[in-house]
Image 1 (tube, rainbow, N blue to C red):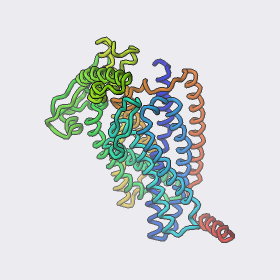
Image 2 (image 1 turned 90 degrees about the horizontal axis):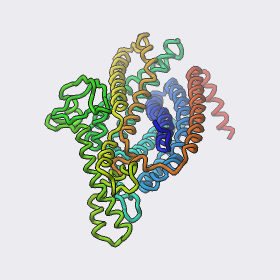
Image 3 (image 1 turned 60 degrees about the horizontal axis):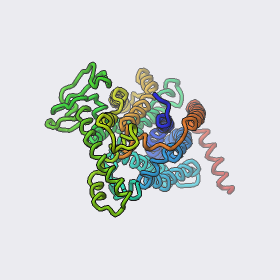
Length: 522
């Protein structure tokens, strides 16, 4: 791997994004679990449910704080490392990010403060409403981020203006209602809910194994088992929907994820295990499940699935079409009144990004050789092996978690969830698995889009800032050091809070009296 500006920019963004995404899904999951627990407290009046909400709320707050600190850096990188990207698509991409900050994040952050400091200043019902608003705000925040990311996967609602040389917003409704964005949102938040449930189950199992806080642990496990079963089933169902939309809008990504080199006649087979050979453009070994991919990917028995080789041939045609758009664009720039050139550009502009892939090989792409056109078409194929195995790790963990929560729900319904040491150990050691699946899913979604930063519109190498390698090495070292420190501090504070555990009823009453006295004194 060459350590050039493009590679280092991608590496830096991948490290910061994937590190930040350690905290986001846990925030999503814990927020709703808090709302459920406090709802039970308000309905029953039992103090133990309030103490549960306070304890898991403390862990939620720690995770939220570290998540905010790691997320701020990501947005700075758009201007620092990806300035041409920001110029090219800022009109569209910036809108959902701005709404996320102004509406969702500020809403979530404000109500988090009220959640922690409003226990003795608000009525039970008012505080419960605040807790639900925290959960809703967290989901709104995820929604707008995923609308922005979904547009990068399926750039609807925008067009390229040859006079301003930028992508411009044509329909904000198309951006918001983008089917890829909506599918990614529901799939991602369901994964966060599953992670939150596994986290609560695992930590509670640790308390039971140590004989501590048994009543709080038992109730927490019952809530997490029910919530987790619904969430894990949702992840599988919504993941299927996301995969179906990928088949429709990102055919090369799905072909690479399945290591499908040749077009599969209907109904397509599913490569359960394969050894992709990218150099020879085939699989050295594969175990197939007949018909499975056709049913999953096309939801029919009559639709074939296009393979990588045929998609490359299609990409070559799009490069040729893009060259027509590029030539027409130069004429429009030279003479803005050239109506014939502008009409030709309007006919072919959607393929302009494919022509820009040639910029890696020649400065004046209108003089590209047939060999360079063919090479640019093959550049549309991402690295197959990492996608193939990353996707399968995600799926395997997903089905494991469905089985895990089925067992948890059964034991909870029989009031035996704290009486099975083997299950408790499984729960404890399963804590890292949702994170593994989530990071694999994020990797597949982003790495599978390469070589595009905006699918079919803007190549990744074309979007970087004019920085030096030394600049990126310095900033990468700074970010790595900063994030390592945040990780160490965050994990230590979280583990300390877990070891300390929830306060008992005596401490709770004493704390309430102090808080009440302070409120009266004011």
